[in-house]
Length: 57
Length: 311
Image 1 (cartoon, rainbow over the protein chains, first blue to last red):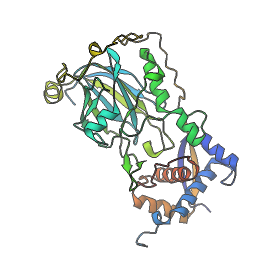
Image 2: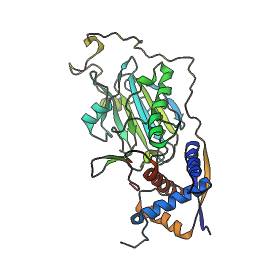
Image 3: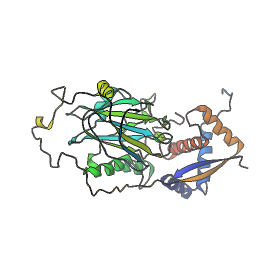
Image 4: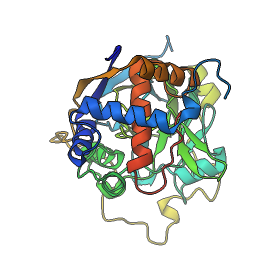
C-alpha cells in the first residue's frame, strides 16, 4: 500500500525514454511504474546512500 | 545593477537559444528563472565572425573552472579578451565538456532526436547567416564538473537557484549566443530543462573603469586578418541579421507532464536518506528524479558514465 505519492514531471523526451523501457519489459507497464522501479533499484544498489538516520554503518 | 539601463531582454525557453549583439562596454546578463539550468555559450566578433570564442585558451589562462574576474578569450591567432565575467553568484562553470550533439544522444543513449546544444546554437546563429559548421566549443555556465580520483571528468549536481546570474562585460562588439542546454538526461541541469533570462545592460562609468580592456590590441601576436598571407574568406565578414529569419528549433516546445510515483513508507524513508545525503536535491520530486536517472545512467549509458550519483 502506497503511503506517499511523489509527482515527477517528465518532458516528451524523457517520456519517450520511459516508453522504451516499458517496451523492453521488466520494469513496469506505465511511466510511474518504471520511475518507481528505477528509484527502488538505485537505492538497493547504493545501500551506502540510504542508511537510516543515525546508522553510521 | 539599479543604475544600469536594460537595453534588451529575452527569455530563452527550453529547446531554444538566442543570438544577441553586445557592443563594447555593454553587459550581457544571464539569469536563472528556474531551479538550476546550464547555459551553453558561443561568441563571435560582430564584425568578423572568423574571430570566435576559444575554450582552450580560456582554460589555459584561467584554469578548469573560470569564474568571477576571469575572461573569455578568442581563438588563436586572434587571442583577445572578448568578455570579463564581472559577476558570478554561483561560481561553477565549465570549459572542459564540448557542447552536446545529436550524435552523442544517439550514440550513447539511442535517441533518434533529442534537444542538443549544437543544433540549438546552430539554429540561433542562423539568424545572422552563420552555419552549423560555425558552432564552436562552448563555455558552459553553471555546469558543475568534478575530477575523480582516476583523473576523469564527471558531471555534478547543478548548484544554481532561481535569481542566480552571471554578468559579462564585452571588450569589443560581439554576437553573444547563449542557449538553454538540451541535456535533460544528465545531472547538468538536474535532469530537467528550464528557461533562462537574457539581458543586455548598459554599463556604468564605474563598471568601465574597473573592467573594460583597451580596444586596441596589446600584443603584436594578437593577430588580425591583415597579418595573414591569405586574408580573404569566401563569406562576408560583417554579420548582418536576416530579416526573413524565422526560428525553427529542432525540438520545441518542451512539454512536461506529471507522473505520480507511489512510494511505500519504507521507500519514502530512502527519499529522506537521500535528502540527508545532500547531493540529490531538496524536494521529493528532485530526489526521486535524480536517483532514477542516476540508475538509468549506470545501466543504460554507453561509454564513460561521467556521473557520480549524489555529487
